[in-house]
Length: 278
Image (cartoon, rainbow, N blue to C red; front, top):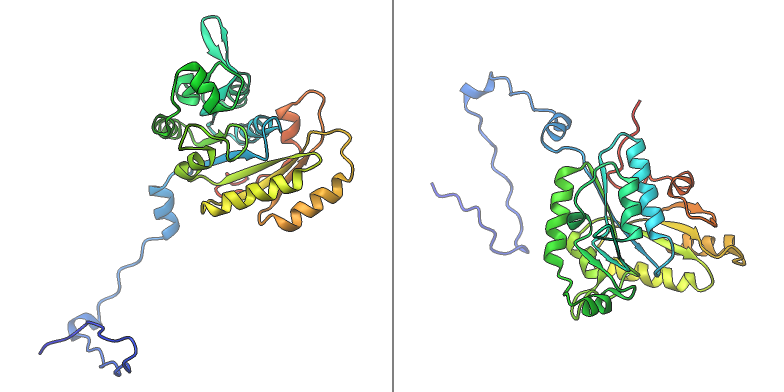
C-alpha cells in the first residue's frame, strides 16, 4: 500500500483521517516520563544578561546610566562587565590611552578585562568617531568589536555595551552605531536627555531602533537641564508614545554619580534581568 503525505493543493477538501491502529504490544507499556523543561533549561543554558545603551544625542548621560546598570548588576551578585567599543577623546595617562567614559564603566563593573577588549577603538580626537578615526589614521571595523564582545560575554555573566554619540552617528563611510547595534542584536535601552527638543529626538531614535527589528527594552528619562520647563509633561508625552517601559527618572546632578543614579531606576522589566534572590 502506498501512503502519499504530500499536499498538492491547499484548497482541496481534506479527507477524513483513517483510524490509527496501535499494536497490542505497545498498549500496556507505560510512557516514559518527560524531562522537566525547567531542569533542561537550567542545566544547558546558563543565565546571561546583555544590553545596548544608546541615547538621543551625545552628552546626555549614557555613560552614567550604563554605569548605574552595571552597579545594580554587581550589587545583585552578578559578574558584570562594561564595554565602550568606541571612545573618542582619549588622553595618554602613564603611557596608556585612557578615556573617562571607559574608565567609569570599568569602575562600575567587577569583571576587569584588557582595554583592547572593552574599548577596541580608543581615539584621541574628541569628535564624531568617523572624523576622530580619520585623524588618528585608523578605520573603525565592526569585526574586532563583535569578536571582543564575544570574549567579554564568555568571561562575564552580564555585559552592558554603551554606544557612542547618538544612535545614527557614523563610524566609517558605510557603517554607523545603529548598524553595530543590529549586528550585536542586543536589547536596546534608550537614554533620553531631558531638555527642550528631546521629544522629537527620542521618537526619531525609537523609530530607528524599531526599523532595525531590535528590541527596545526600555528608556530612562535623565534630566540634563536643571531648569527645563514642563519636565513632567514632557515625560508624560514620551511615555504615551514610546512602546517600551519607562525604567526611571534620574534628576539633574551637578556632579553625575552612577551610584546615586542607580537608586532612581528600576530594571526588573528588562529581558533577562537577574531574578531577585530570596
